[in-house]
Length: 123
Image (cartoon, rainbow, N blue to C red; front, top):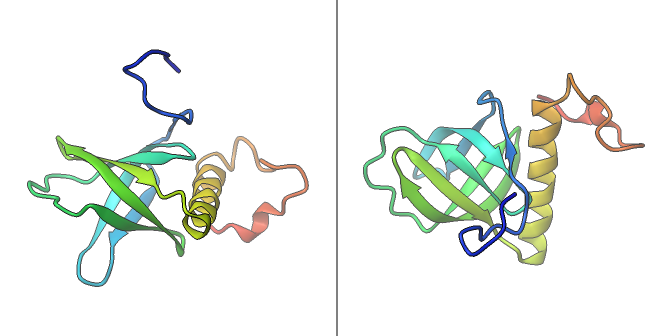
């Protein structure tokens, strides 16, 4: 992680394999996106060629887990998300993050957290 004014992130980003697909939006707008990287504070997603993505916040769903995020930037077929920090939203964002990481790296670290039953996570 770099330091200095150009780095505004509070959390280290974890690069993902490109296999993790999430659903964005609600019933009015629903699309699939590929998670490129994730941290406890947000994520970068590939959304394809959406010319105008004007929403300011969006619902993100993975394996039935839902969290709300603010869209902080959109360019070149990608969007940057910041997970919301209110109590309920932060809890759902942490659960979302944990499940993405467990599914991405299950074969490398089947017991990511000591004492946690990872069989409850369905990837």
